[in-house]
Length: 203
Image 1 (cartoon, rainbow, N blue to C red):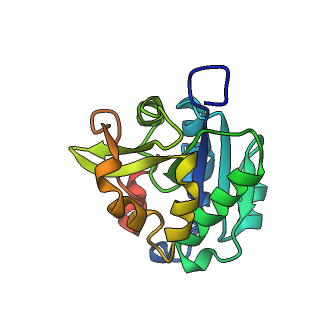
Image 2 (image 1 turned 135 degrees about the horizontal axis):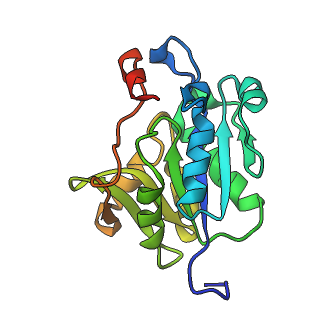
């Protein structure tokens, strides 16, 4: 590690570019949760879970999100190709991490539409990061879920494999044996806000 502290420096990355197609085109970043936009909740969770810096990738209604959500202190990237799917947003986020300085050892990737995953799960995944080639994922009853942490040594390969709506899925499949799974089912609920019915999860 290049840092004097023995703890790896972990940056957080919120993918918040989706247009909410199955929600009638309501951008997920702007859905209300506890009286504030969902993207603010995601940022707060990453900070509380131990991420030193937080990067946010916006896409759908980005200007509106920037007006309504308090993203102060975050590095915000607007992905012009957000409609291509999560892969392009993951690439945009990794690129912003590489150019922002601060020299993180790893990035923890979270999705804006999973408010049931709080700081406790983030902290567990962050704590399992030990090397620049770390590959750590939260698990729910043994099944891999989010958030996922990638050591800096993996970023280039992850970005190269990120395409369409698959995000890092192909990369994770190919490196399945290297993933450290951290059980989080006792501290988090890994539902997505995808359909109008799912809005019931929001407070």
